[in-house]
View 1 (spheres, rainbow, N blue to C red):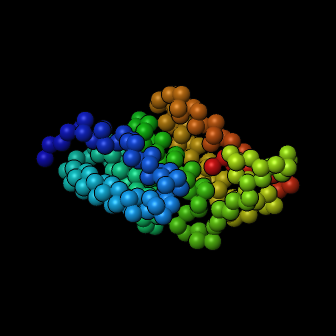
View 2 (view 1 turned 180 degrees about the vertical axis):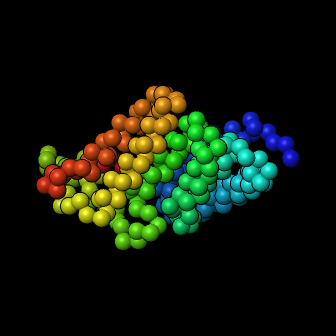
View 3 (view 1 turned 180 degrees about the horizontal axis):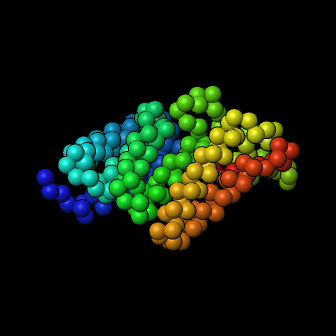
Length: 215
C-alpha cells in the first residue's frame, strides 16, 4: 500500500475551517447560527474520520513519523466538546509522542505536544477531576477599570495541588517547545516561547500578588 506523502503534508496544514471551529462557536454560536454550525461540524468530522482511518491503515504498514504526526494533527482538529479523549488531547499526545519516538527531529510534533501540555495546564488532566480553571470577572483591579483583553484569575491562592499541577504541565510544555526551537528556530516558535514563559512565571508569583493571563 503506497501513499502520497504530499497529501499527508497537506492534511497536516491548518485550514480556514480549523480556525472557524477553534473560535467559531464563541463567535457564531447564537441560535440563528446553530443549525448551520452543527451541519458544518458534522461534515467536518466526517472528513476528519475518513482521513484518520486512512492514516491508521498506513500506520499498520509503515513506521513513519509523518503518518503519526498527521494523525496527531487530525485528532487535534476535533472540538474539545466532542469527547473526553478530545478534551484531554489523549490521541493527539499519543501520536505526537510516536512521531517523536520515530524521529526526534520532528519539530512540528514537539510543537504540537507542547501545545497539548499548555492546554492541559489550563484544564487539568484526566486523573485530576477536582481541578478547575476559574476565571474571575474581567476587571483590572490596579487601574480599577475593565480591560476586555485580559482575563484575571483568582488572586487569592496558594501553591496547592491545582497550581503545582499547572506549573508541572507548563514546564513540560516549555521543554517540548524548546526542543522544537532547537530543531527549527523560527520566529513563530520564539514568539510563543515568550507567552509560555509569561504563563509559567505568573504561576510562581506569591499568593499576595495578582496574576493574570491573556486567554
